[in-house]
Length: 267
Length: 230
Image (cartoon, rainbow over all chains, first blue to last red; front, top):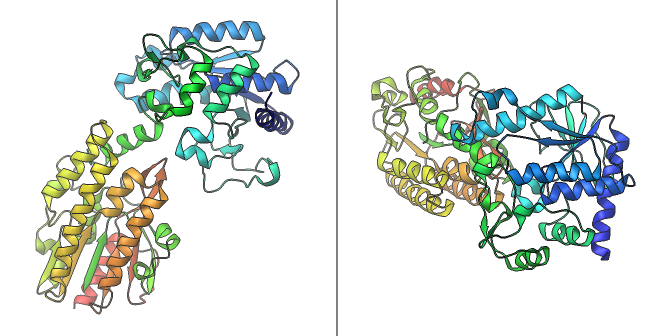
């Protein structure tokens, strides 16, 4: 392992162990994408091959078939406790992206997760966001408190100096823990290759297109690419000028703003 | 009297960028929590009339809503001039174009730069009208939507907002000695939602005199302006 990847891994494992020590009921979110699969692997490494807390997959019902197949295969091979968060009621009522992407994401992702958190009484969740993904994520902390509405008060976050990650004494509903916050997309792929991690086949190019970021099928489009192996993906990233989330239809913030501006009568 | 009506001017950024001319002698936040939504036309109509106009102005067709002079504090002046003021003298063509580009941005048919270019062009036009009017009227009420329009698409990008606030600070600096009484007021504030900007329930006000206003409502200024006019 290169010393740089080793440093990244060491810090991430320290954060995961710190989270396990500080919180009573921890879980890790897994979308089956490269980032959360990397986090899952780091959780395995942190606890010597066994993930000692549940793994949550949010199932909107609109995921790619490859995602479900990959999820079930890895869950069986790695032997963790998989919990699926699904808002069956909203799906039965026909919620879909056509009815509004913001509303759809809120009901099928946020509400499904809220219900599961409440039911299982989780006080902390490991998420695999990275600072280089998006401008606003650059402001995130490793330990990031959320209120009951999942709101993040980024102006009022605990300082994290000298790698000290401390949970606030009060005024939060659950903590988000971000062990790979300091990684880049490029480094994740290098690590995936080095560790021989399983990769969702959607990431590899077919007919000149591949998915660079995985979401729900109706809201994710492939980017032009000929990268059919991890090496080719790494090579592609060295020169790519396309943003990582270019294939995702809507940022949450963009969808929210569009809805708000409509309500205000701007559009 | 000069009133600069600066849409979405936010006290936090005024202080952050140390905009002393915008702050004047007395400055603070206004409270608009009585309104269900922070709608631009409703808030400026309420400012002009001293009454909460939310129920009277439906969302649909709001941009075409127009008050008569007799319904507003402009009636207290002999020769008032209102430049591009929502609910009164809006320069419709300019705002229709800005809103068209805003929609086009969300439909992935226009870039932020295309949108901002038009907003800045309209801002320059209003500035020209303002400086042509100074000294010729007993009230000049001039509206600028630069902070709101740029802010909606870029409030989370501090460097862009710094450019906007520096421009508004320069504007305030140029008008500050032009009249005995200068009020700078916004309809609402703004907060970042990712790179975007959403309205908040606190507007901004500043005066070149100390009046000791304590978190006034936007409708309270009707009487303040009337008092100064009379």
